[in-house]
Length: 113
Length: 115
Image (cartoon, each protein chain N blue to C red):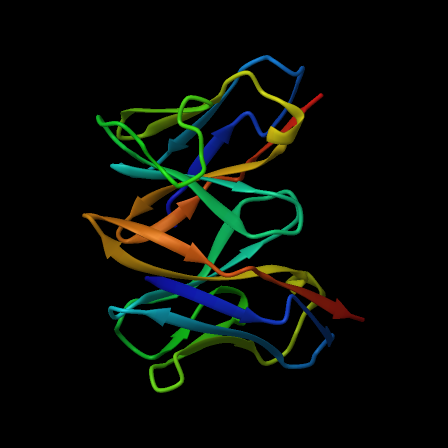
């Protein structure tokens, strides 16, 4: 199947700093990528939909100024958590759509101290 | 609107026993349905998908699921559980929305396999 990578896989940062997470589709072009957040023992919650070359569409309750998404190419989308706080600590997962199937990255564990 | 309901947040089976994970969906249009598996601290791996072809879908690792429109169900089964099947399983529904697909996940079922 198609492969999606994320970098970094694990990041620890101080409160108030910004963290960038990259999501790459390695063997297919993803005009649409999705960003999810998963809290412990919970399901994935869609944060935003990222379309190549256009602004991301955010789900209700997700602050677009805090979670900056850029989808500059067909194989790369980035999520920047700005001024991170401990409550932003979570598992962030991206996915790319290929042939009507979502292929998920391995996730990025963010811990904000 | 679309949604999926997974009955049972935790399921325990003995090694070698039948695995049955339940999923019911709600969708205003013919849905695409998926089962994903998530191992600890990892992303989601696609097990199988239903996209309006055969109603009995076979996936990886010996799993299969049957789409039953009359019951709005898409239960996941495996005849004989292995220890390596212990993981969390998510049912998901997708429908075209505005030119791109938006996935709705169930709350997940954690499968425990007892030796």
